[in-house]
Length: 48
Image 1 (tube, one colour):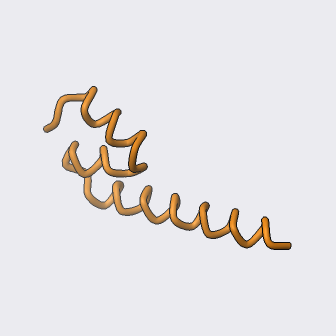
Image 2 (cartoon, rainbow, N blue to C red; image 1 turned 90 degrees about the vertical axis):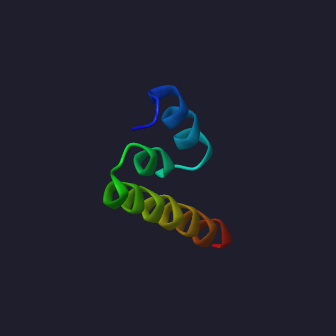
């Protein structure tokens, strides 16, 4: 298990990555996917 400050900093830089460091890869994948979805949705909404 990574130290909690390191996981926090990684999560700020790359949302979901801190979960990988904490040994929760499924939760990390979900957060990475949600962040990707949010960015795509924002770009689609800005074009309209």
